[in-house]
Image 1 (cartoon, rainbow, N blue to C red):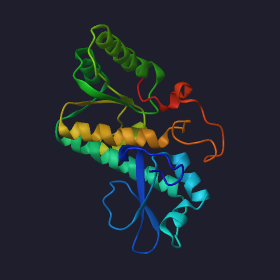
Image 2 (cartoon, rainbow, N blue to C red; image 1 turned 60 degrees about the vertical axis):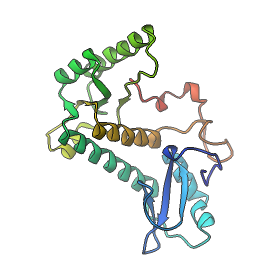
Image 3 (cartoon, one colour; image 1 turned 120 degrees about the vertical axis):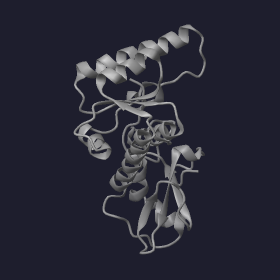
Amino acid sequence: MCALTRAEKPVAELIRFVLGPDGVLVPDTDAKAEGRGVWISLNKVLVAEAVKKKVFARSLKTEVKLPEDLPGLTQTRLEGRYLNALGMARKAGQLTFGATKVRALIDNGSLIALITATDAAEDGRSKMVGPLKALHYAAEEEGIEGFEVPHFELLNSEQMGLALGLENVIHAALTRGAAAQAAVEKARRLALYTAKPTEKDTDRAAVDGDLLPEATDERREIHG
C-alpha cells in the first residue's frame, strides 16, 4: 500500500524507502534492505509530495533525516539499476545497438524492447517507431494475443554510451533472454517513476497540481 495515497498497488508499482545506519532515509530500489520500510507509489511527483507532507516520519514513527533531493536521488538510483541491467544484457549478447541492426530486428520481429535516446533526431526516431507500430498492428490483425514490444525513451545518448563503454548510443534493442527481460523490468520501473501521475495513481486530495485522466496522459505511454 502507498503510504501517501493509501492506494493498494502491486509491488512493481511501488518503491520502498528505509532508514540507513546514519538515520538518513534512502531509496531501497531492490526492496532488499533490512529494517522497516515505507512504500510509496513509484512516481517522482508522489515521492516529492510524500516529503512535503512528512509521510516518512509519520509512517516510521521516528525522526527522519532526508537527503537534499530525495526524488532526484531516487531517480538516479533507478537510472543506475537500468543502466547496469543494460550492461548485463550486452554481456549476455542480448542487447543490439546501431540503427541498421536495430531496424533489422524490428523488421523480423525478434526484439522484446526498443530503446531510443531522448536526444535522438526526430527522423531517426520515426524510422524505428513507425515499423514498430506496424509490427503491433500486424500482430493485432493476425489475432496474436499478448504481443507487446515496449518502446523506452528514458536516457540520453551520452548516458547510455558511458554506461555501455561506447561513445554514444542512439538506437538499441533488447532480444530474448533472461538478462534482457531484467533490463525491460528496470526500464518499466524508471518509466513509471518519471511519468506524470494520473487519477489512477492517486486521489486528487493527495497531490497538488493538475492531474490528467489516464486515457489522455500520453506521458505514461511507453510505446512509440
